[in-house]
Length: 417
Image (cartoon, rainbow, N blue to C red; front, side, top):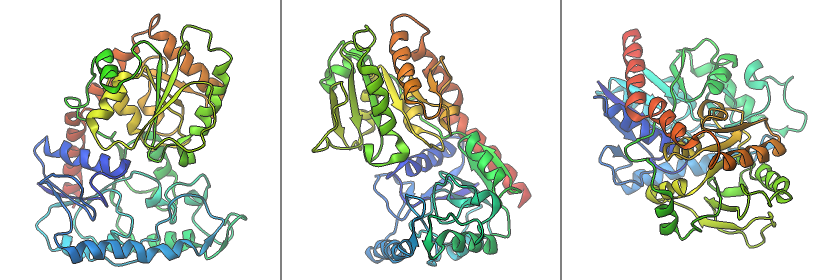
């Protein structure tokens, strides 16, 4: 079976990392798979980017040309909006190719237009990495328009100007007449698909994002700390997100509030000497005191250093308000490190409460603080969270396990035609 995956990038962002891993997971179970991207950064012969300088320039130009559309929407939900309105030619190339099945991932930044997607004639599997496919132009939404359909009557009162979300949603409704096989990495996102006005009758399967457990494995904690120049005995709490505290969806403000709750209790042995290590951003010029020492590692493009960081930490905090899966949490568990998170979104599928970490009440900073303290206390007197986290990873998210799930979906999709 020949499968072509499409994703905007092969490595930049969580969706790109997930798409690259899924591509290699299915190759590992015998599928002839290629990943096609608009922005290639990895030295991977199975990844194909634009072959010429004009091709790379054209891919970049489409993304830039779509940018002014976002300025027409006033007061809309924060974050990226993708109108997907500029033709790319991908549909005609794929339809004429020898591929048996097209596997879509994050095809935004004008990689494919809505009309392009609708013109695909090959069997299609689409792994969703956010809410864009069944929403308007927004990638994440807390509203109900995706459930009810985007009309003038249910537009949020805070918005004005051109209704970019309604325009985008109505084009999806018009062009996507053939249901695709949808895959989501979490039960929460599958529930959103099933409740959506656009895709509620489309087939949906939950398959978690894979991780290569032969690569992502624990490193001896003391050795990892020595290599990273971290204190050998202090409790270390790790937080990471691309951009660090700049993305409100990642919840650093909630972690900051939780640490404030812990300040007055730092005399306890679990918190004695606690340090916070932040990866994904440089140290800010003006940092708010948290009551505990903070170290910043900057941006990490090296998986080996990230594996050392996970292994060096006693706990990883993932205080996100919304995650479709939560790869930081699954990577931490692969390295046998417990996770403290809120019981929401895809994180509820990753962390087993009081078995591999702690799931706090959304979005209760005081309960998040209690979870941090409980996990750090369990390090010396409590359940073996580390071993349980590693076992859960190998059982549920190992690349070979996930690859076989996708192969089953491919076979079912091909049989339907």
